[in-house]
Structure formats: C-alpha cells, structure tokens
Image 1 (cartoon, rainbow, N blue to C red):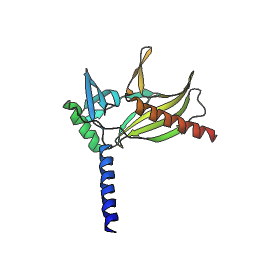
Image 2 (cartoon, rainbow, N blue to C red):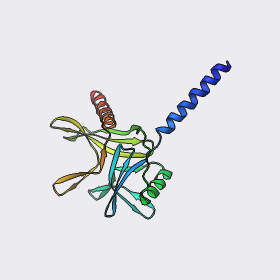
Image 3 (cartoon, rainbow, N blue to C red):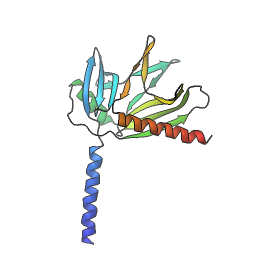
Image 4 (tube, rainbow, N blue to C red):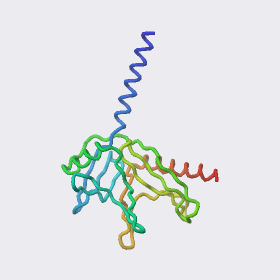
Length: 183
C-alpha cells in the first residue's frame, strides 16, 4: 500500500509540474510602431495594434453599424496587469512554452453566403481571440482578426507556429463539419 501511495504522489507531482509549464503566455518579442505595439507570445502567436493607456492594455477593435466589437479579451486581471507592465518596460522573456488552446464560443450561421460560423479560441486560459469560419473558392478557412487599410487587409493576429495553427484550424473546421451534419 505504501508503494502505491508513493507512486501516486510522484505521478501527481509530475502532472502538476507539467501543467505549470504549459500554463503561461510569455512575451517573446515586442515591436513598437508609433503608439502601437506588436506583441509575440511563446514564439507562437503575434498580435498587432496593441496600445497602452491609463495603466491598461488595449487591443484592436472594430466598429460596424455604430457598435464596437472586440476581437481580443484578456481573461485574468493579474495577467492584464502583468502584460501592461511587461510591454511598458519592454520586458521580453527568454522562456517559451508550448501554447495550449481550447475552443470556447462556437455558433454556426446558416443565413450568410461566406461566413459559416463565429468562434473564439482561448490561449492558456488567459487570452481569448475571436475568429470566423469562412467558405471560399478553395473551401473552408479561418479568418483571424484583421483590419482593412485602403484596399488591402492588415492582419492583427497571426499564429506563427505552423503546428499550433494547423491544430487550431483543423479543430475549428472539424467542429463546424460535425455541427453542419446535424442540420
């Protein structure tokens, strides 16, 4: 019985440590352009159009029909505070971890020609990003936040890590296909 207890405690400690390693978003790069920043987390995801004001971090938003829509949300107050401090101090971490994600919101749209679903992805339980599943000339694809400048689009969110991007986008498309089959 004592051996089982020791093995269980040892396994629980390893599992706890493994969870801790994957439960963080580290700023691995910061670029400043005028009053805006481009921030990279875990060498995996990059967000442009970030600004600092009044002790808070602001992320790009868009307006349509007199309403403002947020594409990005910080889910933890402590993380928002640390994020502000680290960006303001230009504090870059040399530590980088694998980035965990989960799909949060997911709503299919039957009435639109190209938009098939609205979804959001949470990274490390700290940060949420809105996206859309689109149907285009070559099939389904994921539209991440971007803004139109003149006649072209500037990406505000880029998944740099190809493995992470494929995993997220495949899971979103699979979820859409599974829900679509139920109609």
